[in-house]
Length: 552
Image (cartoon, rainbow, N blue to C red; front, side, top):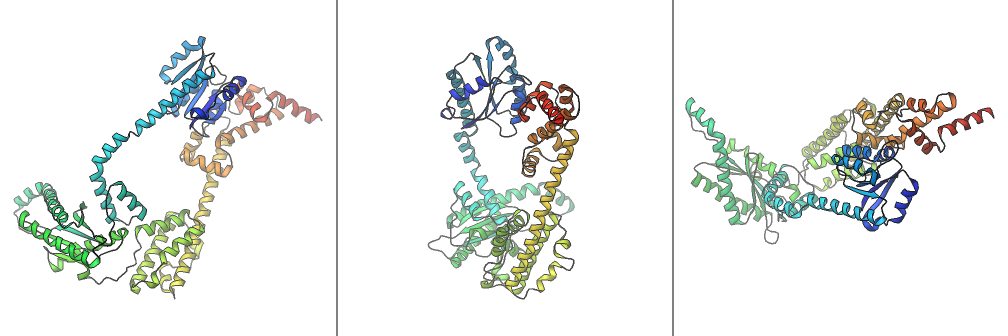
């Protein structure tokens, strides 16, 4: 259903058009009607129509002036001009405004319907063109290898939500469902051969290109061997070649997944040394049971590479061989941090309760060291303090001057006490941020109101001018103003102008055109029109009634 605005100054004509056409049947909803172009322009703030049907001859702002105003701000809106035969030549001069259709008066309802159906088909075609399925599919098909690699890189770089992973796997036709995963990273060893200064300079000129060629040669060998072993996915990320082992759900567990990975990696290492004449060192991370956790396996694999300085290069180094890993490790990952900070900034009491519950869930049953537990709490507190800093919250004012964040870690006598204290801390900070934001909203609206009261008499005052003065965007300001003032800015501006006009009518002998100028209307007739529409009587009638009341 497309949104339509009807602009016609003759009420009987306007009502006739509304009554005679079954708008919904033809795919339209009349969202607004206006008596002239000026009123129509003011109504655009409420909701932007897809189509505007407008008469050409109207007071205050005619159809062509309205069309020019629309074209300047809303290029996608279609415009239909209603024009008499004697006005047609004048209307044709508006070709540069890209008027979409003309309807000559007198016209029947069917003639207008026919034009609107054409407009609807045009909008439909434009929408279809933008979403041309074949073009998009072809572009998508060509981009798929790159999209897959970018997704796989993001999968190991940070913890992704399960829903996002599942959606991307479906979109990119990746089968990654499994019972076990292992991430390995292959790093080319440095060439330790000594060179003269001249040779070193020459090598530096082509070093970068050689490195890229070597990296792709390693990729080709690895892909061939991984395919042979039906192991998983190989891709480039940063300076590493990354292998993601995806163990078969039905036949492989964690032990066999690691064994199969090590077999393939040794094949890769030997093939590179034999055919490419240089060596690589491979780091192998922990085995994990969830695809959401492969980022941990990747980080462990990179950590394993650090041990080549002790164990030597041209070998495979498993993190489990060089560091003791607990069955489960507490991980305050990026996903948990984002969820906590989001709740502190814009959450509800229920959301902060659920988030803290999630952060402490299962810790009591997990095999972790006290040191890992303390580090986990420290990371949690660091994220909380970061949110406090970003929101510019006075921590002393919220929690008292005796609060020392990291000293709190030693005060927790139990897991339940730690959870309760963290929840209390988060709730206090969340309430402070919400209160501060509400104060900022009110302050912003108060500034806007003060500015508007000082400048409402200027004919060019607008929401854009107020936003420019406040240095904020119009969209952000509109939502805040409407929420705080319970009306749109345009309605508020109209209200204070009308109140000022009523005051001048009651207390002065100024003419209507003088009052119009004093309250920001360049066109006296439009002031009278707006006053009658807003107040219910003309300025003259209002003054007469006020004087009569004063005498009585």
